[in-house]
Image 1 (cartoon, rainbow, N blue to C red):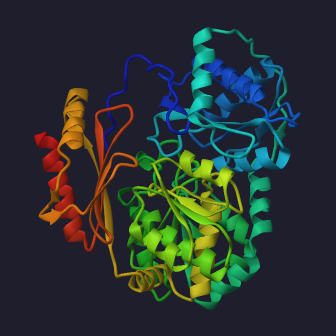
Image 2: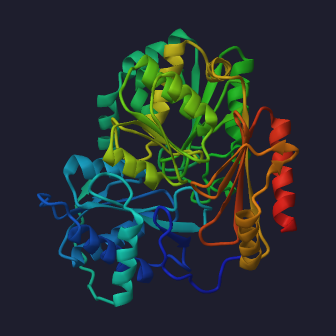
Amino acid sequence: MASAPLPLSPAPIKFGTDGWRGITGVDITVERLLPVAAAAAQELAHRAPEGLNSRTVVIGYDRRFLAPELAEAIAAAVRGCELEPLLTDTAVPTPACSWAVVERKALGALVITASHNPPEWLGLKIKGPFGGSVEGDFTAAVERRLAAGGITAPIKAEVPRFDGRGEHLEGLRRKLDLSALVDGLKAINLKVIVDPMHGSAAGCVTELLGPEAAGVVEEIRSERDPLFGGHPPEPLAPYLGALIAAVKASTAAGTPAVGLVFDGDGDRIAAVDETGRFCSTQLLMPLLIDHLARARQLPGAVVKTVSGSDLMRLVAEAQGRKVLELAVGFKYIAAEMLAGDVLIGGEESGGVGFGMHLPERDALFAAMLVLEALVEGKQPLGARLDALQQQHGGSSHYDRLDLRLADMEARRRLETLLDQSTPSTVAGADVLEVISTDGIKLRMGPNHWLMLRFSGTEPLLRLYCEGPDAERVNEVLTWARQFAEAA
């Protein structure tokens, strides 16, 4: 896959929905990263909750090129702020840093990662003392500190290190009955094939389930590859050919398999069912809602983003659960977790969090609960999902299309058109409801809607659609593309 041309000059330092990211060696350099890390550490100290007397800032990193070296470099920046850096001793999933913050009652964490972005990218995520990503007002304050130009000199010294990966896995073991899970997988003859996409979650499932899972669990693409096989380490079907082939081969040989895939820093999840069908969190979330609410009977509301499948709501309401529908972005879900009693919260792009765990996406914990749900239902993933859909109004299909507009002026014209002349029909179907929680969502019926949502920073329109079958979804997305391009 050809990469876009690299910029010749760095972009301004600007935080997005979860951190600051850019091209390694252009946007992300040691010289630019050190003051950002110092400003973030100072803001963590400034905002420390009353009674939190820690001076510790956890530092972690993923498997990208230069990530270990840059993590060690920002430790010196943290020390220069008269704070105490604590560095993971190996690459870790980002949720491991959040876990360490909560367990150690630290000020927060700085994680060198570009998550699911292409291989040439790197970045910095900031985690607060509650164990989740900081909100926009925090990163705006970091940007103001940078603009003010305060100077802190990095202090190089031996950096204390700790087993962040091992501590996270041990924490998950305490929350799960993994021995029973392995026995259950054997009982239903289900193989688990894991694809960490060369990222920092590599080896974690195998280690969690232990030697008794030998022959049940297989991992592919677990070696470190900073190029990620030439694709972004994002759990999307076009990048999962090896996993889909491995799952289908196992099923054809007589052992149904489920594929589990994690993004580059282990906070997003997707799956592949025994037939080779890609299953995003649009399908995994309803399964998890059913399992946690019905089988485990855990308390709490269900939180979904407005781009999430209607099946999430239908399953939740069947279990008598309150459903909150929020704007796109896990930070909104995390805020709800901190404020109230939440069973589960998730977004269509692969992030799932749990009220009994962390206000944070944790793909490893989600993966174990998916397997637990399959064992409880005594069915492989595809059969289990098909049955769940039939119980709640029949099957539906979902797809998303990202449409790059000509320029920001084209975007403004389309925004004005949608605002002043919202379509009353979509691909021949009447619009029954217009929802403006985030972008414009046009509902044509149960399990049938189109959502148009603009990127916050570029001329990019995201088109989301759910419909009764794949053909109808394609018709609606084609209509939406033509509508946008004609504006």
